[in-house]
Length: 404
Image 1 (cartoon, rainbow, N blue to C red):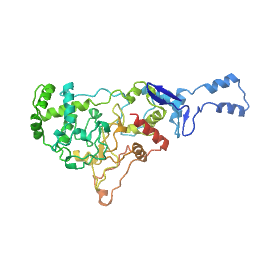
Image 2 (cartoon, one colour; image 1 turned 90 degrees about the vertical axis):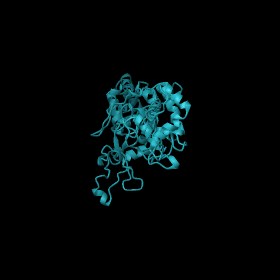
Image 3 (cartoon, rainbow, N blue to C red; image 1 turned 180 degrees about the vertical axis):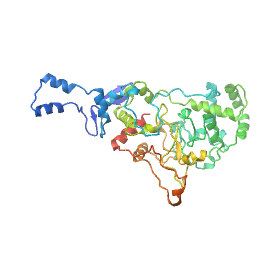
């Protein structure tokens, strides 16, 4: 059956959903059993038993059972309840998690309140290649609105077409991150904004040179006067304007937020099944939870290439702590379907492939030779374990991710 919610069609799969079959499982077997043992209750009482839906407690039991399908009627009854009454997430020891919740307004630092003038200036700076030494590379070169605020490449290129080492992450959720960059080396958007400008492989500029260039443009001085009350262009004000603009890009009232707020038809049956698996047997809330769908921590997914050509030790390069070797910041999963390719090195071009790799437990490199005694060799994250999920369950989880 197909229903509509507003202008968007929503597919509803009736009864127990699995490939090639539909129907309500609670109709029929009770009557056959009665006939087999020689009891013949009245037609009315039999019909009452046939028509009676399972209780909420029975529904919770049904959807908890492992099966290559789901009773979609029971699933909807369970997830029609308040969030605090949903099935508890399956978590490993050591997981830091929060319950799902609609995304709040992005936080702002007291020293950099957003204003329309500051946001407009930030957008102008974001789109201006004049912030790079060559005057050919802008922030938007790697963070394109039409490409999910990434650039669609495994790794970005910068000054003199030099390839970078890491994938350009989308920025709409950056306002909610407690650390920025894949290795967490910046603690605020204001601090992060100046990093790419000075990076010799990205925009390759020096801040004093940037200030001199922009101060020569009267249009910029006027815009800075409107945003900050004084015309002088400084690196600090450039960072503040860029940060204000990036905070303005935070997603608002999207499909998942409307679902969490009570509009439960915002997810179709397969997406809802994916949500259920995400919370339970997929164990995804070990790392992706709360309003931002991130634990704001760092994890090793086995993609560090230690001792090989593409070695990247992530957080270790910032802290020097061997325990951080090979770990990278947990990104938000909001808008994740638009931000491929995925992972810190852009290794995976297909979202379903990402889910399949998590189901497999991700790569688990073993030390070779002298690496066996190397304290920096990254050990596997204990939160990552192989999962017992079918291909249909992987597809359902992927469909849920596409709805975020």
